[in-house]
Image (cartoon, rainbow over the protein chains, first blue to last red):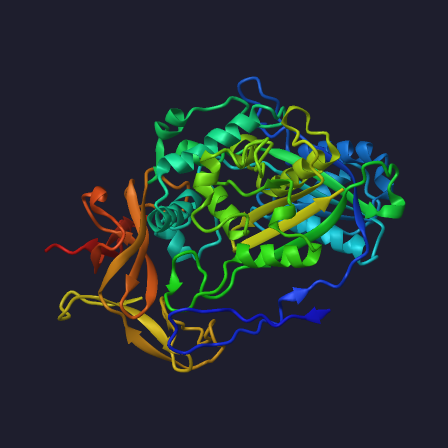
Length: 410
Length: 131
């Protein structure tokens, strides 16, 4: 491993401090890792009510794994390691899922990393194959979501009792600052929902497949001012799976997709969303993870043909694009208005409808993003295909905080 | 978490910690004695200013499923104190619409909710300064 010393520029400090985080690793060069096959269930409410089928998390995970095996032309005993992302499914949920495929004695690791669990599982599978610990590994994500506001326990108990642990409210606090600092309007933010729901209408696996108008967004119920119901991604249940292998173990080598980067970072001191220190400024988690992904892949923002970013709330799509370097701070709303992020625009974003249309089963979400990139660069995205897409990026955030970036290329 | 009390001149104050090495200020106080900024282990307890400005705010319109048992809607946000620290807080106001970035606010100790035995549970909040 090469240690990288990172100097962080700080403003307004009375005692400049040079940061040296030896924990910021430059990844050792790994061998080439290919995507052998993917599987994705429709994201929906599988609660058995109103004519909807009831499915438990292990059934959803199982369904996705079997699809991925079939696409990869593999059978379960060939898989040598499994990494299973979920948040609300309890102890050993990956084992429960895999038990229904047949236990083969392989290492199964359950990955809880909030909304970025799926991306974290993907990265572990990638590293296992890339570091030649095994030749074939699977990343699985599944979730049965509780109803209502996500009641995150990523806050100390006294803060939960004070009502701080409400995810839309946390994003609202960041949105209010974003609007103030860059003159962004609630109409700008609402356009993210409009675009993503338009894309979602082209995705048969999305929970919501009807487009919405800006007036629908602006007249929906207020949940945490200024955020309304249609600024928030809906919850959903679902499963997703991605099989990774060495190039040699690919059954079909035509249009092979390989992993160019898989990065995971967490927060840094001085960058709690709005709390804590005023005088210490460090790059955000997203900025750090993007930089690591560019370093690891050799690509830059201009090289991406298609991008999936984390639209858990409509506003987060805008500042995510800015923080990852796709445009300057405060520029995303204008580019969105001009159609730059549409399918057919300069940089198509959330082509499958994003979290806003798909819904958000925490463990499966990041893998669904990665699967959309895979389909796009394989040319298998149907009516939402970005012509000629060869390289794409998926970015997810998670409470903690976490930031996961995956770049796939053909 | 705060120094009261009712009879104290100048009203209640939040209690924080200042790192003796890097001078960073923390709220709540660092009773684990470890600076997350410079890794030093020596702190002094300080009383934070009771007045600050709103850095950001939101009004929560829907009852969270668990933990929070106070009134709904409720307003939360960050208040920036002159010492250079932002504190996440509830806001005490009958008029949510008056909340905005930069508004002058002051510390109050108020009821959060009643517990199962009917005891009043108190918390700190900030309320707009009346001019």
